[in-house]
Image (tube, rainbow over all chains, first blue to last red; front, side, top):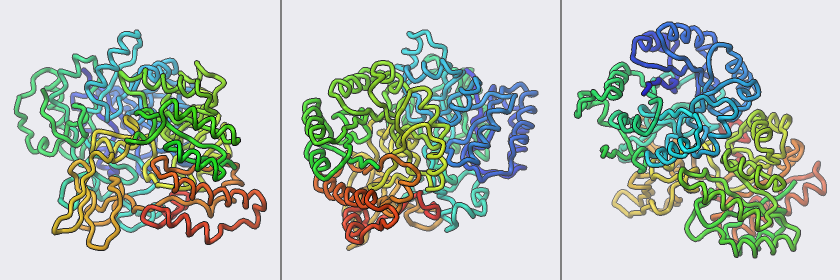
Length: 297
Length: 331
């Protein structure tokens, strides 16, 4: 079982990204996804900056993947996407069908991101003929669904390594509207980059103080943190190749360490990181509402 | 420009046809379409009856099979495609790449439309679906501004259909998992959003409360107009303020944009609302038929009549309408 670090969904300062990935170089990770996947207005980091970080991570023994912007709306977005695909060094993660088009037209290999909606064998077979090297399952898919799908894949003889989003605030939706700018009563086009004030997004609570979602610019993440560390052994038995960890602004070294122990069957039954786990959810994996907390059976 | 109207059941289909729809769209009575609501949709027999009714009156019929075939459930979705083809529909509305592949291979001559659930927001995405699956038309998500629609239209390899009127999805359709996060059921997996089975209403001392799977979506003071608890249209608390943090309960209405949409070469306007009553569908179809006829008669002098706007407003959620993302400042 390999561990990957997903793209940072939040808008951090350049210094914060740099420090984060300098640390990440020492973590027991196999794959690191880099790039801005949420908003085209977040321009502190240019492609060259990501490539620079990528080289350092590669020297530290990590595989590097460049993730594409999930919601492509304008010609400028497409220009950015074309540059990303033409980077010449790293495989891209295609997060929408525009990226799929550019990658397949150029005959480039690609990882299929979690929002590409790959729920069945027929879709995977189609993409496998076009350069798919790995696919991340949709976040809402359950263990039972995944098991059925992996069995189908096995029976068909298809080689399509599977990645599961196993930790972090779940990426749940993308919109034309920026909810963070809306909260500040700012128009999206003149947002003053307020997202940078929220390194882990802006919590949206019910009127009873239940953390429902996390606003992150045009993206909506789960309110609770998804945490499948106790399911890693089961995932391995199912044939999952990679567990993806979604970056958080604090405590990520401990999270990676815990998943590293989990993949070596060395996880203590009661995790000392109780505080981190307190707000965790596991529902999707168990076929329930994503927000539910279900103990592993 | 073609008027495409919703048919949640046979009476709605007939009313839409009678009021001048150029095409109607329907789904089967199961999880294979994005309005998988109890009591809605068509058996094979009813569909045959509806198709016959529409075809005799020169109206086309599209079949929406636009949820994503779930693991272990492929046969149900493939069967839906087979049934629609056997019934003689004029086009399939599909989202899933596997199902598009299946339909393109099995029924190459049956036109394939990309559902809004396919989430194609750029002409490059449309090129992908066109090259890979030979789609003839695509329904654009409601996230694009008019300028962005113009860009897509200029380079699109396929016909475009845009949403004209009805409920407003604030998120890019096909890539919104909020509903399954709260309830376990989503548009992609079950064809539902904020499903009614999870809704609870309760009168409390604090007011009338609406809940979705236990989560408080909104609370109404006495005399306030209460709406269905669609999860993105509730009032939530963000950093100390309580407001419609994601979206107000409003409807999309693009009547004002019709001349521009025509100039961009948009092929069809779509009315949302297979879950609506036959009377609603009939009223909306009638207004849009008049508008499109007026537009065809004299595009330069076209102006939506106040009577049409008043009729549409009265039928809208929250009784207010918006141009949605077509208008840049809405974002």
